[in-house]
Length: 168
Image 1 (cartoon, rainbow, N blue to C red):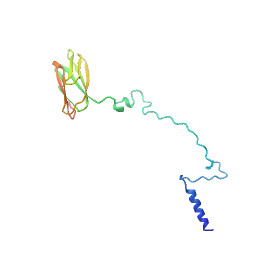
Image 2: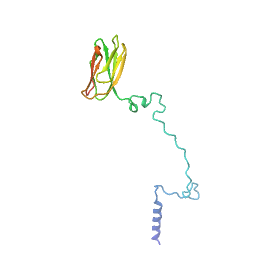
Image 3: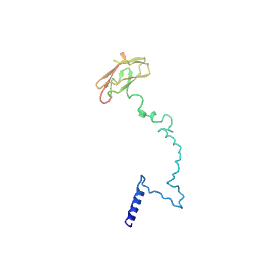
Image 4: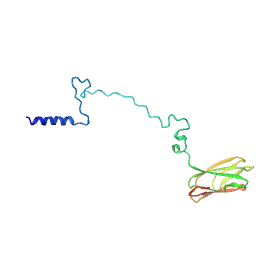
């Protein structure tokens, strides 16, 4: 019988160590006022937590991520500005280089005493620029090696050349 006693202790200890928890089982004593594991208390309901505020909550209007350059994908396509001046010397500069495949925004300032008609040859882009005013129009980007001809009639012309690297 003595041989069985240590075996019974080993079996009892092994059985107590089995289970999904790494915590030892609680044993209730007569003086223990904690609830028994045999009769668990029902779970209590908790109120759901409030949803997290948006990333720019509390940010003043016009200062959030979408309102800043590059924010939220910028809804408008990238454009390369092309600034030309129409004056007594014609349309200057006479040549502007832009990167390939990026649309352009052609801005023409008219310093002549009369209005002028400006057009991008081979496109539907054409507009009138009153004396002393600046007007702009957008055009699609072109492939490498292509060019736009800007025609202001007798007032002058210019060339917008598409190159790998933008330059003056």
